[in-house]
Length: 370
Image 1 (cartoon, one colour):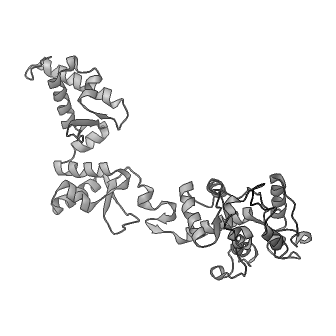
Image 2 (spheres, rainbow, N blue to C red; image 1 turned 45 degrees about the vertical axis):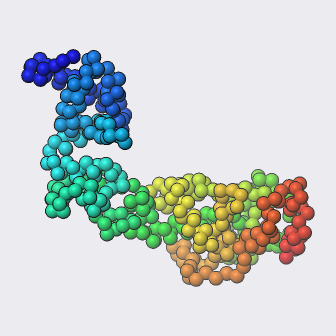
Image 3 (spheres, rainbow, N blue to C red; image 1 turned 30 degrees about the vertical axis):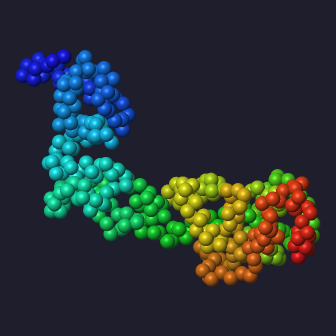
């Protein structure tokens, strides 16, 4: 199909085809990339006329409705631009549109002003003027990144920075919120303590020499009974002695990252909904501080004895804080180093009925009598 640009009917036909081509492309996912073959496959260009296709794409590019891109082999391709975004480009000068396009490409990560200047190849004065104009029109905004707080970073005004930029819920305006982290860590530790140890009643103050094997339901019932006891008994007050016992072998109630995340979201202690990856960061800190331990053969966590004693028995202020919380000093080993399993070089081979098992372990009898 050979169209004459000087012919009014030809120009009208080209305009209709151009609009039809844009409508078909805009109906597909926003990130779709169109090359020459993909545009012909839409069956909008009559007779797959290459000249007509180039005329339509050139016009759409001039109107900022198409964005011209290049593949690795330097072949041309296009991406559709929404009409409201195209109107922004049309209201900008060439330099301003160039700066805006690089900021738009950066997405939620933003772009550093030095990289922006290097890519745009604009003079510093020109680029600064363009940035001020774009900020004045509320097209872009300057943000502060956690990793590089002194860098001038820009992104589109309608976007929210990614967590890599803001630091996630533990940061406020690019600054680590120490108080929030402390409260979250304290709550998390006490939750894990409640799922790792239990406080027996006074009649069960002494550890039995031989402990019968309990079912999972019996374990849960014993834990619930201990945790439902009056707060004075669990905190070391009254006539009960300050004793914490670990749950017996076979206990599977140690909390996982998912369970801890759900519990903390249901507690409403956090003003934002926490994600598992964010809680994993907090749990890693508690592990490094020696407050909790990651179970070797599962994805669960348990509290060490020293941290459990501090959380359960130290005197508390009116707001629930431990007195002298930063100087907790309670004698005793951790749950892992107390048990023979914690020092056993063949623990990974220990199983019921195997050559190494708890029933025939010569160290268990000695340890249980202590």
